[in-house]
Picture 1 (cartoon, rainbow, N blue to C red):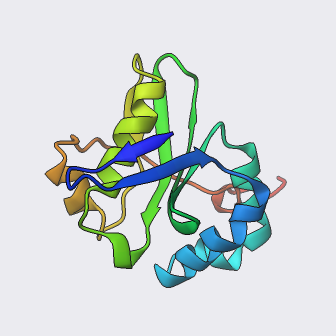
Picture 2 (cartoon, rainbow, N blue to C red):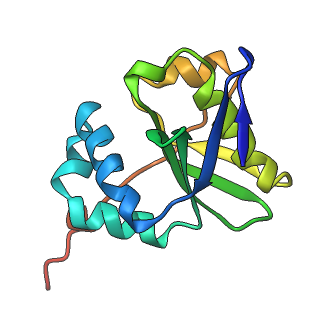
Length: 144
């Protein structure tokens, strides 16, 4: 798929392939997403299991990615969207989100955000919503 930016630059977007993962891992490390970096095998499995998984290329150079899950009807949940720092500020993230949402137009898009990405989503008029998170390890699994 072609992704054309406002400045006329065209990028190529395609579905994730397993050999893309090392590039994703490097972007995660550059972003200090240490949980994903430290859980490399689990992160790779998450990419394998996601039904929304795309990468962005400038010619053959890996410059970004998006991963999420969708039921294809109601919810499109974006877990990660990440653009190489060198390519930020050109509208790539915005156009990538718009592109994947166009694949599932009846869905509402929900996104995980960090303190640094919050302003990006607000700038694109995403509404904040309240949610909760808990890992399995946080459950009290003591046998009584």
